[in-house]
Image (cartoon, rainbow, N blue to C red; front, side, top):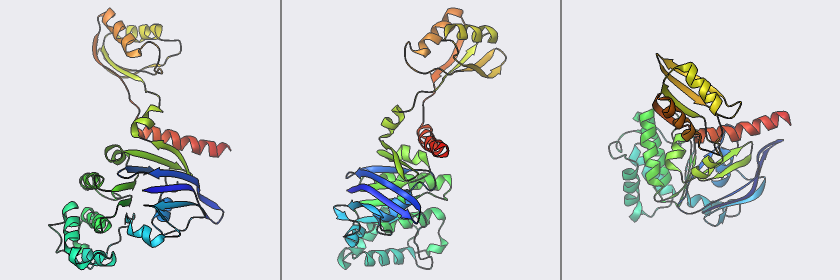
Length: 318
């Protein structure tokens, strides 16, 4: 549905995109991530026809974004970060206006609007002026205008920006439903949205793609974290025997204590004899009470920070 090949964009001497390439297949929900200024919005504006690329090419549903821009726009539903709403219009008037400019035939217009209203949960507010709506409902109206013409591709730029936690959950559920019927590219700073809604993640940093894969594939690139255990036993004996048991130099840190209950982090890499089994045998051997033992798992946030901070450090030392 989307093909991007060696795409470049420069603003004077500043290179916002440095030859990125990726593909999005039909039915995928892509999380497009990156720090501020990474090139996310520039990429989306090129895909939607708002900007011309400086080099490379991009196509949507087989249509080139430069040579066949109008056909591309007809295939796309776009929600930019600043929701494009006419505040003085009623919700139903606005959606009729959007259906009209999208070229939906008069005979199908009512059904198309009703579908968008139902999907976006707007039935209670269709008679209200947009200015009266909460931020969450305004975002829903923005999503409704993006899907009213039933486009095969949805491009959503920060769809939950500025919403409260309840509104974020509501809009996230809506995006998950839309992902069942559309190919979706979702740009966001909320990694939890990506973890819950996206089938694949693309991370861009300083105009370059630094990772592209499923969440599981990206997590596999990140080493496992420390082992955390809660033990009821004499602190000095527990820590001393752990240090004797583990490879020399392995950090063993008491992070909390209450009476004879201690919480310890053992920072050792995975591999070899499972560290958890080794620690469990030691605890059982000494008759201590083991309340908790688990290896801390890497998160998508860990992967994101590792990839983007690494590039920033490389740039500083270049």
